[in-house]
Image 1 (cartoon, rainbow, N blue to C red):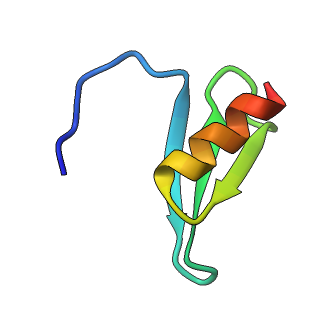
Image 2 (cartoon, rainbow, N blue to C red; image 1 turned 180 degrees about the vertical axis):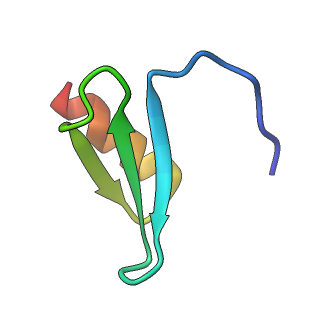
Length: 49
């Protein structure tokens, strides 16, 4: 997997209990979304923002 340096507006964590990725908005930490993949979590977060 390749990682890029960006000034992204979200952060990603893996919930190992539920095996889901959680994307959280950096400006509004109360806004978050989950997904099976990182891409799913980010896409779900974009629909909430």
